[in-house]
Figure (tube, rainbow, N blue to C red):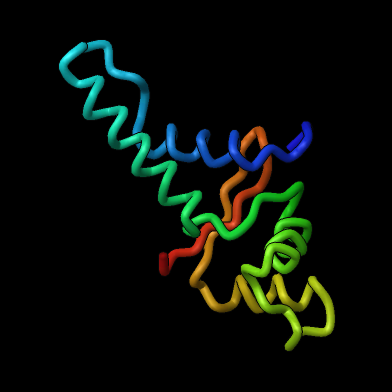
Length: 105
């Protein structure tokens, strides 16, 4: 990631990747918009835990937002290792930040 973190754009980018390109057929556009809204809404509703510059920064932002409790860990690196070991999350890089995604949402 090279630019500043922009959560809304990162989530919209992921939704667009999930739904695919805007259809050329006019009849398919309304359905595409509905799918795009649903995908983006899912990320905003909690599927995306946090967005940051890198994984450690993303963990830090998740803790600050109250989305992750890191009190059982000595530092953020240990918290990151625990998140990765749990296999209940995955990470996606976008031009707008690294997104921590909850598999269980």
